[in-house]
Image (cartoon, rainbow, N blue to C red; front, side, top):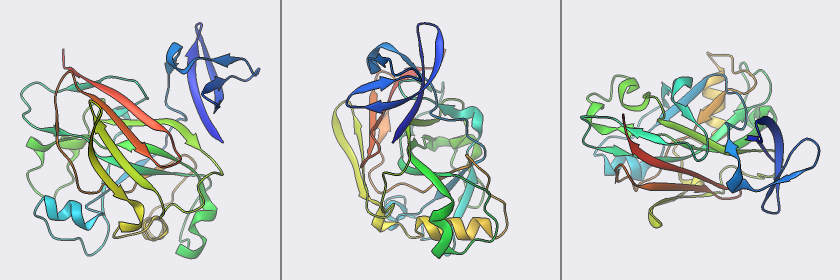
Length: 246
């Protein structure tokens, strides 16, 4: 089931996506191009994982981490499907990162990897945008680089009960219709269940917390006027334009 939230005719709706249409609570159909999209749910904590694909670490000239390299993605950075990413003034290099996002369904604390998926509500797509100019040390969380307003597109759906194996999904990123990035979740250094077990050992994960699981090789610069389309197999497509910061 692909759950979503949107505004149509001045009202907020909690709906589902089915056969190319958005169905609201009353079953009325809406054209996806004729609504204002919202985040598909209200996220709790948003935790990112850096360098979770070996090929991405290699393209940046960095060593593979020996344990998950975690960082916070502030909730103020989150942006819905179709929302405009604001390109910061004075920044020379901004790039996208297509990622599988895992949404927690019930409290997790010291959960073993073999049981971790029982605590997952569903999945969505994330774009972990980065202002590369501000990544100055791999030993410091890149909050300034990744935490800017609009630098966390998420959506368009919360996909529930449709993903059989989170380690068997293709990820792709397109800029202006050109395929720029492609990878497969089987190539993660730390799998979804390993990440959940690792985090839940020292931190309680709560309903609607979000885990961003990393990005594969293939990052490239985006500029104002570009259109990004990020796809994760079975989860739809997350689309966001890039505009100049006012």
